[in-house]
Image (cartoon, rainbow, N blue to C red; front, side, top):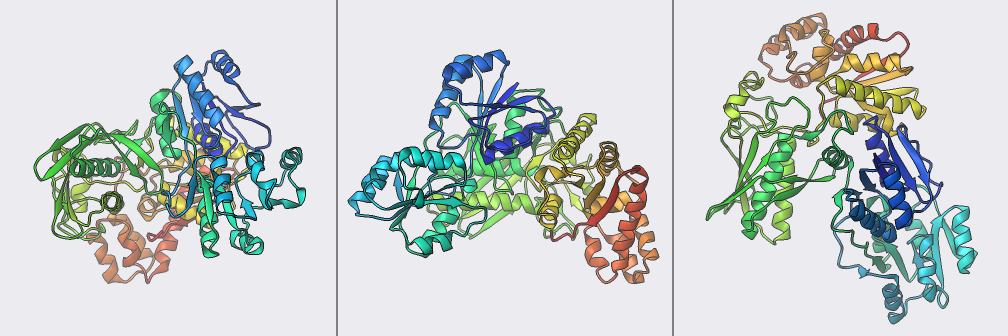
Length: 594
């Protein structure tokens, strides 16, 4: 059993991630103010001291704690650390994301330090954006100087201020979407005080507005966390860590793409080269901004380079590269920029249409961006402007490639380094289909009569922009299991489904394949040709269908014939409609530039 300490935006994230498993857990908050729906979780309200937490964990067979509480909840963090040590329980800290600390701001470790700074610099008219619980901590200042506090518009906020003796007329109430610049311009405080609250605390918006008006900003540093905590800062890292610390909680384990492995190996190799220290792990940034840490299995130096390896862990997805080592050899060069060099077991591009120049190593665009970002960040942190060469290799990759469709795509000599999200979700078995059902059940329980199904991160990002008012639980990945997802949605009483689909899966679905995994079906050029003929496309363009290597090339090929895409969606609808006895369906073909 898992116990979450929440009451924050991160707490909501933890609930969302754990609900995907369909396994029971507990969600604890200090009070009842946070409105949150836990499909598989049991709410627990009330603060816990060390004895109460120990008893709860022992009584309820808690085997893992997730600390998703506020970063400034120091007493809770300490209590959790003490209990975890006593009971030998692992703790995952779901942390916020923080920008780099800007040394032009005034940083203080405590509120007393902040007061001393304010008084020594004779600053009056403070605007405190540090929360209602800090009114008493700043009492020494506001008893003598004008001060406003912005707090949540709640009765308990007013009561805390009243008990402290703070003037009610100096309370400001936070509102969703509030314009910081307008407020700061209206008050013109002598300084602003805030806590290092991270993205979910609107930290950067406060700093940006204050800077525009030339208002000094005092920031209280977030307190350090216990060293024993496993720290993550996003959904993927949380799920991955839960899967490893509590096997069986999820029906299937997730993993990392070859792109993430290559990125981690590259970061470790460059860090090793710059420091001449053996690397054992590498923390990288995924395309969505989340950071994850991967273990480094090997680190070898020469005079001019460093080579690091990361073993591919695909979780429970039947990936042919699972268990293979992705190596990156990094050297500094006099030539500016970043060069990707050919490596053993990584294929070479021989045909256009992949989005990578012919002759280049088969490292897809997203992994290239991830690798480039990590290199640039490391060079900047070391004050270097050197060029860098990167050679990604996968021993045994040439044999592995024979089990893929790479030769048909014009990729020869090895595998591709791929991945759009950096994460491998296990689209592979009956257990995953069961997890789809659970996600649909969660959406239904939250009152979502309609859902938006999609294949993965890229399509979901596009669809979220089209349906901004829908909750996160309404967006469900079908992976390749389009037929199963539609049947389950129909069975669970969903009344309306919007399906977003990329063109590669659309041409498979339109032909009648409800499971679009590449191990089962590949793009059929003869079928596409027949569809183009029916759509009255230009004969020259129809003839060129035989030359394409990727379905996305169809966007350009038939750009002047919208009827082709209309016909494609109509065929998809014809295949899907018999699965739906109750639900209605809309299909959106997602453009490549999304």
